[in-house]
View 1 (cartoon, rainbow, N blue to C red):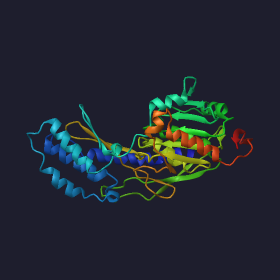
View 2 (view 1 turned 180 degrees about the vertical axis):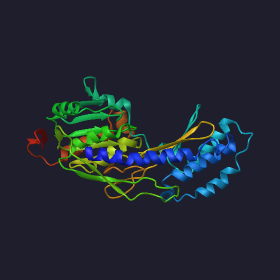
View 3 (view 1 turned 45 degrees about the horizontal axis):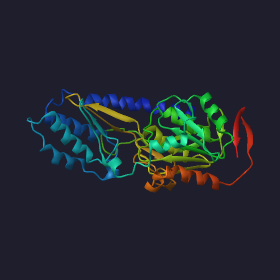
View 4 (view 1 turned 90 degrees about the horizontal axis):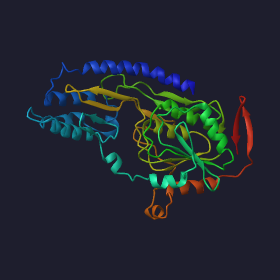
Length: 357
């Protein structure tokens, strides 16, 4: 895990250098604080730093030609915002946002084209009222002796001792469900620390690139990412990870890591993606734009920016909802029961306890 952490620090230094250089290239003294000036600044920021033109087949110069004629000095701030948001929507990217004091511009179809596949009401029925909480993780044992962990964010630090306590409590269970639906991300180190408890060996989990110039295809070579086994109790029984379209950023990376671990199956819907290091820049009027500016890939060199498909696509049905059942959780429970049955063995690995089927 430390190797991956150091690797990200290694990448972060040039990334921050690029960021500071890029931000100084698009300054208020180059473009005026006017509707046309703000438009040109926004268009140029995207032109020089957005990473996915080729994958999407977007002619950004043609987009400039269409939208430039829509700006004039008589426009109000809200009119500017509307047209700028429409221009950014040409990217069809749910990770591109325009921030103002009165609204946030976003690409709605990123979510609207997919079902929610999550219900707080149903989730509370499974957790009940006697669940435990550690490091922001809610966990309990379901009535069929399957462990359930609800992870709604990676913002909270996940301590090694907390994870040990969770796994000790869930050790008698036949398997584990980790529900990261609606997890918008957080600290990548926390996602990595959690995933590292599900492998006994170093794993190649993916690749990363970063922008090296202003051209649409100026990127570094692919650099490998590795996940090292975590120190502490490791889990080797069946694991089902539940996902939906609202899994982003560090949570998206967590899903990528888990798909590389043994005895792990991902169930639900395609994730929301957006795992790359974010880039932010400011327009002359003080508005800011933020987007992913670091292409990420899985171990098969498939880009994960636009989401990760589950191993089994399952949607929440209205019939199950009416019965107070979560279709995705119920599917996961059935899958755990079909895993091959073996005796439970307690193993010592590097003087650390690991429970294994």
